Length: 186
Image (tube, rainbow, N blue to C red; front, side):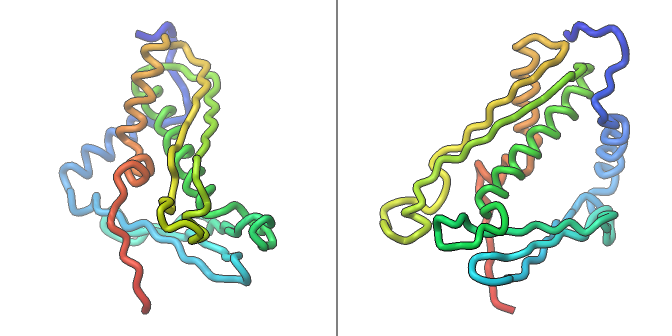
């Protein structure tokens, strides 16, 4: 068990999450979400994506702010380097989802966090992307996430916390168990 004897506050409203789980279990049709983003090509390999809303809880939902992301490839690939690469965005999504999961699971388990830092690395041979060698996979060879967590918990508790965060991460699932992606022309 944890070593704290005072209420834990990691900034996560666990009761709201538990209430949502109960409510959605009672109304499973409202639990069907569709996440959306749009992307507009700018020039070269530069594009800009926007996230404004999604469908869930039985209707349309809007973020308070439209989030915009510039995507490009580094200058070493004859680009202008206007943003992170698409593969870096995948890594950001994965590490962000896992880190949020750590906070949520810690709050639920009564573990007080003082700091959480995660470094993520994705190994890739870009000859697969460039089409230079058809025998090389066009994707990550390996992804490593290293957490440094300062909390009122034992190493075993922190390892269990990380394992649970992985189980509940939609991004971890997509990276480790790829889903069918349909690409079509409108």
